[in-house]
Image (cartoon, rainbow, N blue to C red; front, top):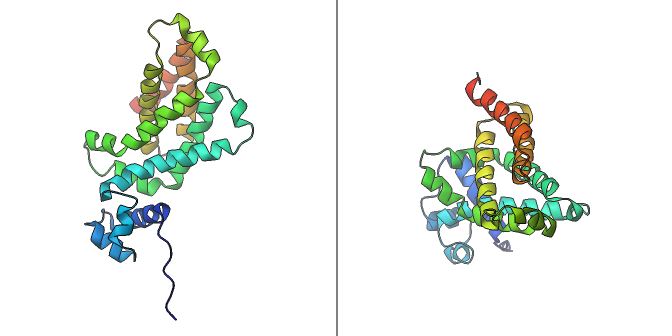
Amino acid sequence: MATKKSIITKDKIVSFYMDYVLENSEKPKSVYNFAKLNNFSETEFYSFFGTIESIEKEIFKMFLDKTVELLNKNPDYENYDMKSKMLSFYFTFFEILTANRSYVVMILKENDNQLKKLSQLSSLRNSFKNYMTEIITDDFRTQQERLQNFQEKAFQETSWIQLLLTLKFWLDDSSPSFEKTDIYIEKSVKATFELMNIAPIDSLIDFGKFIFKEKIYKK
């Protein structure tokens, strides 16, 4: 009796891809070879992805989608204020990254081409900006009306830069359980919200001292 072929899904292709990269320290040479190795057809591959490279972009987006899914499973999350939602997002997102650290480090540290790295994160960027828009509250928008130059797009862009800086810090973090990244997240999010409320001095100085200590005096 012939073995029934399992149904190919997007998640399975992503799992096959991550395993291949980690086991071979390189990307698959072609869709044909990748599909044949994992016993599915090129047609099945192209029903989910256009190219091998598009899988990488989708993986980082899937990390974010999983983060939001987990956050929404918490019945208290909906009632969190913006700052608490952002902190919850960061801690959950980086827990997922840590669970997949070997893959993430390999992909983001494989070369020094910053434009390529940003390209790999383009789908993540779009989804993250959408998430940031969703957590902006009406009360917060009202509070910020006195800031003539403050716009929602500016908030999205600065938040994206903050995420990239946090990602860079996490990639370089060698502390147990990446505890220094947790400190970085707490201080940077606190500084961000106090800055937008025009009360930045104490938090910015505290955050600045932490970064200076980590980057200048790091042994």
